[in-house]
Length: 295
Image (cartoon, rainbow, N blue to C red):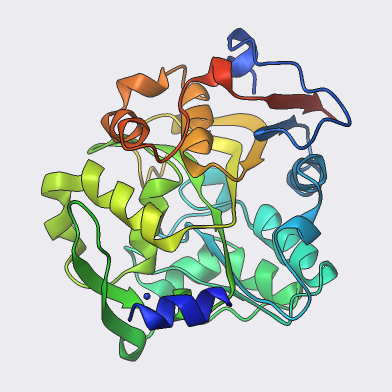
């Protein structure tokens, strides 16, 4: 059964050098996380996906795919408030190379979408690779059961449920509420409604949303990371050029790796500790097979 049919039925790094990950043995399968560093956002993204077995592992011929970056803020790529446009473009190209029938790139930004889509560089980059880049349309919002411990139902953009595969492409940043915003929190850009209502119990809410959307792949943009004044930043002095992309299937593990970009232990983040307790993924970096490479 296709993902979109199932969901309709329900109604649907340098700081990592101290981690000492397990050595990835060639020929024994894919690593849990591919961690690639280099000067080119496109090349390190391609290398990360190759290390995981190639995009054909995640996208099949004829699939409709949504690539979900963070396009939340009216900021340039250099300000590191939105996902790097070269990474988004590369993922779109890889999806089509794997046989995707259609690729959409979209988000529900905090600032007006017509501004963020353009200034982030993502609209131009994604379209140049052949993706559709629709603005969020309130007529596509539908209240859908989440079946979470905190969220029972919420307004979801149906674009994200009427699809076969979702690839989550967050950027690693600081955040005033959750300390960091990484992959799980990126799902607030796939929903509508009064998102401020979720702030009182934000850690549980983002865990429920991540479990609902179930991305087939998470690609963490750590090319530039926002060290201060997140999530929207604005000053270049708040940005660190980290030149890293991490990718994997376990979205909890990816957030744990993303925390390490900031020299933060995963267990220090409440949402990661709770996600681990709920069995949603692994946060102990010593237990993960991490393939690290610089190109």
